[in-house]
Length: 68
Image (cartoon, rainbow, N blue to C red; front, side, top):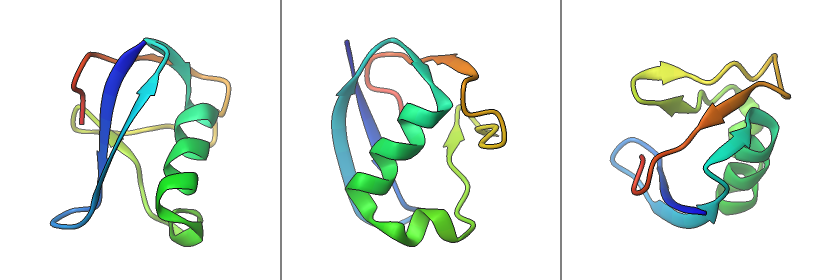
């Protein structure tokens, strides 16, 4: 498990624990639970400078401790 921070640009933050290897679907679901349906309205989720491939929900990404 790693601690990950989700944040809207210049907005609220949400810190949570996720598995180090995690599917895009799990990350999107976690963000939607933290910030509500606003994320399903075209908001991109960016990890290390690249948008997650939300069109590939089973794609696995490796998260790092404290990642944002």
